[in-house]
Length: 64
Image (cartoon, rainbow, N blue to C red; front, side, top):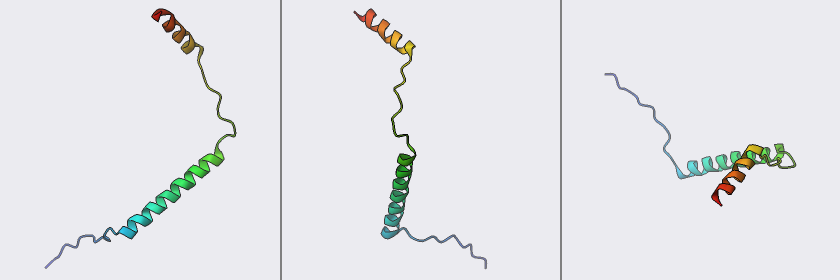
């Protein structure tokens, strides 16, 4: 008689979920720390296009 064996996995345990959560938190903290260290010292300058300013100025004039 042939018996089909199914894959038996470990049951989900509270300690396993907690350990996985700690590992993910550690990965996120490492990622954020690495990103902060790699960042520029100064924030980038605000980028404003002249076309946007003209469009906004025309819209303000039309509303008055």
